[in-house]
Image (cartoon, rainbow over all chains, first blue to last red; front, top):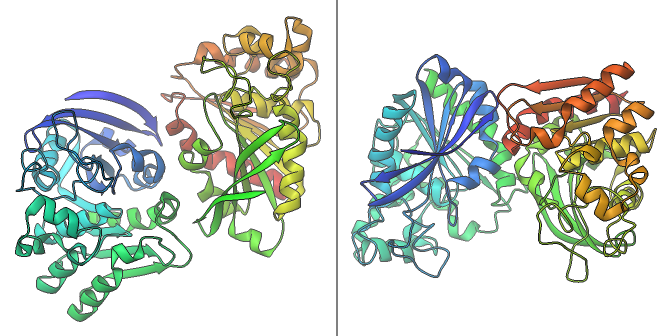
Length: 276
Length: 276
């Protein structure tokens, strides 16, 4: 593992590190915020999965998570959103290929050799983190924004017991029925839509639900509302009588100004679950 | 005035606007955060002056000021750091020309026609703001980072009574004696160093002091510490018995991770003075 940078931040350390990833078969970069409490021993960790076009860096510098993480004594990890590099497949579109991994294990050419973000986030990076940093492996929570909200919801439902709490900011809720989803799931997983179902939060909610506290915030002025299909997940949650809080926030759009506004609520929500 | 963007943020609005500037003889862009309290009438305003290479945008998305401004009911304005555009003089160096206005009125070629950031921040932009937004003109405070900290300190001492409180993050304290200063003051103001003195916080502190509360935070691990010359200003403040708080923050560097960590303290400090 290589240290790219470390900056003191709210009494802790905001680090950026790279490592050779087995899952993605390339070097991967991630951000990790360790709160001051990490000096005294392992701390819980909140995963923050980012959206389309983002790297590890966007949320790390724009979402304002560190202030709240320091207050609650929680680490926050900011993975990249895809494999990257000259040997990694890509597409000219902003919403496919590098920067758009969609948190799946691709099975189709040319994506399959590197685009294994599900395994990377679910299995490999947790091991890397707990081996190198004072992170309490048994106390994980997960959140994310947009495509990363999709990742948080689907990973949490696909890996019952791994995360103590789950939240999302403006998540892509129903990718099998949306422009943000059908194209990518077809490209990464092939035309057989049965392979898509384990990567659609609405379908997973209908089929199995979630055994963890759930908080979702989406702006009611989100310019990508049609792509998110919040209504589909809200209906599935209500039909299932799933314990959850879904908030449509008045006047907010899809930006980091929205994310940062509600970050304090989300970190506090996860802190409650992680302390329990 | 043209609206570039408006995003809901912490119950208020983070806007970006451009306008034709008389002072700089070009279009200028600025960010303005209006807190929710601005819906009920004019609110106090905090100026945030940014550092070398920054535009209006960097602090607006990275410094985390909006959360605190919303809590205290204060607007925050983020001016650009220089005139810009194809007709505006520039230099290949990052620390001269566009992005490096140093908050002076240039008198030398090729800078004099546009590089009048002192007048822009001191006079023109306040008038633009109070004419177009619910800003209380008589309740202003000022802060800034690095070159912007230099701007905040020198504007406040050069315009007694204009700002009710003054703070700075890692300010350039003594530019007439530092690599961040001598080159630029020479370029913008000419070789006669008597013209530089009204743009050096340490010299101004020695000569006249400041009739307002003053807070300075600088990391003791700041990688540009030699350029800042905090020691010169600290000495001048102590010699003058100027009421001030100077904090050397353990382990912090020059980044926005440092700025955001202490932003809450600075906004609260200004809120005390603006409410008084």
